[in-house]
Image (tube, rainbow, N blue to C red; front, side, top):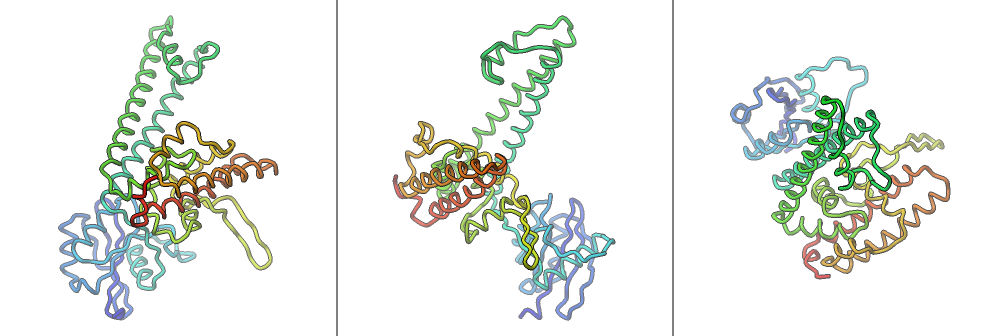
Length: 375
């Protein structure tokens, strides 16, 4: 059967798609360059024919998964592959769209490509919303930095006991007056931008809450159960759940750690073993949220009012995993601190271990019937 299969390599851009095919007889040739439009893709598939013998692939990139869904609707089996894992010939200094398409077709036929997980429409929509909120938080931080640096340049200092970005701090900023009208206009503009960014973040967080209510029962269960962990509230839980898609696609916690890029790099040969910094070759959004949550485990194990409220509807087995995480990760943090390790490295190591508990909770939550067990 495999001898009859034709493998398509697609080098996809915003406006064009370079197409190459690896024929059953071993020949790899460039076909044509078509426009990146549904009608052009439909004509290409119709011209090639024999849908049951076509296997297409293209690299994940800024064009997303639209082409994947289009080809799937037309009956063509398609894979989206990881760009960084496409084999590269040493010394090859010529790169064109046609050559890239031929390389994809050849590598796809030989089985040398690594496919990425393609989310369904609902998962991708939720992930887009979560990432929009993350971008808004970054813009809010920039707006606050501009205002705080302006106040620093002009010699303005808040009174004793006023913490930055509290309500008292903002009241103090609003009552400031400058002798120069230009500085007053600058202050008002920076302050307006801070208020605007705060309102934007609030709107997106409310939209995330509403989106979770409309999500599948399985997704709701995962988001609810992840909040049993210390340091993970609703936004963090939604971020984790939307970034991993289905936790069951990871056969072990170690695979999830690798997906997040928190595992150490290694360069070993013979008896020599050399470990380096974490790879950072995985999902940066998941890695960031987990490392942020890991800071909570520097504190002694406890269930405060906020965590107790989040655990009200969580099944007892999930609570037990969350408590085990507190005890183990606190000891881990304390042991590494006593050894004199750098705090950032300690938190990264704790975050990597936290992913193991996140994986265990996700597996239980996604199991049929388990998410409906009452606490």
